[in-house]
Image (cartoon, helix red, strand yellow):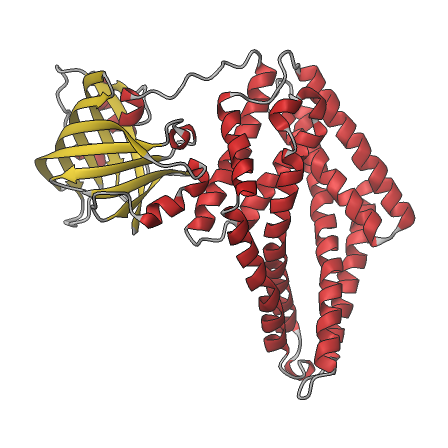
Amino acid sequence: MREVLEREDKWDVDDRFEVPDLASCFGAARIDEDTVDLVSEYYDTRERDLQAHRVLVRRRSGEDDTGWQVKLPAADGRMELHWPLTDKPPKSLLDLLVGVSLGKPLDQVATVHTVRGRHRFHVDGSDEVYAELVDDRVRAWAGDRLLAWREVEVELGPAARSMPKAAVKRLRAAGARPSRYPSKLAHVLPPPPQPEPESTAARVFTEYLDAQVDAIVAGDIGLRRGQDPIHDTRVAMRRLRSTLRVFAQLLDDSAVGDLEDELKWFAGLLGEVRDCQVQRQRFTEAIDELPVDLVLGPVRSRVHHDLQAVELPARAAVAEAMDSPRYLAILAVLRRWRDQPPLRPGATAAQIRAASKKAQRKADRRLAAAMADDVPTAWHRARKACKRARYAAELCTGLPGSTKATRMVKHYKQFQSVLGDHQDAVVAEETLRRMGVAAGTTVGENGFTFGLLLAREQRIAQECRAKARELAG
């Protein structure tokens, strides 16, 4: 499998359109032109679960770019994953999309035949394509639906920063208009219509939920690709859980069900892995700061092996969970929210703000209690409450007149950060205590350095509590 980041602009054109001269817009020293004939067969579940998450699967044959391809949303465009051409989808492709497809089989849903005129722009005498304009004449069919159209795509190569404004002006002057469709599949097989938000408040709320669903789906695919989006996935789940709790009265219970508990379960599995990652980096940096003569015995080796002994089973537990019906049920709920958001009809901006303010009051009470009790458990409760207040305020920043919400995001983010460092120190203390005991009772090792590291974490925790009091004024 290979991957390519695709950055392209799509344009609708008619039969009278003539490709303008864009060479000077890209500073091209050479233009290669040719024509290729392509057939793309698109695959999805019967319920079109992939398309709902903006994921495309196609089998392309013809004169160029043949093979199986998966297109995934990416921050700067779309990520294309490629497999060699085979009759059936490769197993590794199907395994990659188990979460998005909810384990359902993929069937052919549309066929697109494209006669593509290509204009490839090269700069500085390089053979690398700086940008490419393709003029596509398309015939497509899905069931009894037959369509024919013409469109233009401009794809940027790795060296191109962005689409030149001059190129956009020339395309518009020639009669091109930004495409109404994100893909050829969407043209021939439009996504199922989604209900229009009934108000600005509903739109803002739904967009916030969608952003968390996007991150969770991206994390699912990333984990199945062998990447490490543990932190981002966990944060998205935390944001979603927080939203379900803070705004519970505005949500349809039947659409939410026990999702908060299920998200807590899976986020907990991710947390086992993430804690090891944080502690490994934390302890390594602390050891690096110590004078060499204070690092007694194989301290680094003990840190590495003890954390690895926890992390490897934790990763295995995550992988096992991701193939379970319980985990797929979580993704099934998120998939339904694409078509039917869980916000109850009639929810208003005032109600959303009121729920957010309630979360802020709770955070303030828990902060006061933590400063009075001064025990780790109280500070931990305060941290979680500040986190929920921050996330609720984040949602409110999309509402009209959100200046105060923006200030609240910054306010509670500061507490969340300081108290997060405090919690990391508290957890690290217990880990170092266990490591120190083990090292002190093992031949050839010494618990001295772990005692120094433990004292360091205790000092950090004390400084964090002092900083939280300072923030509270």
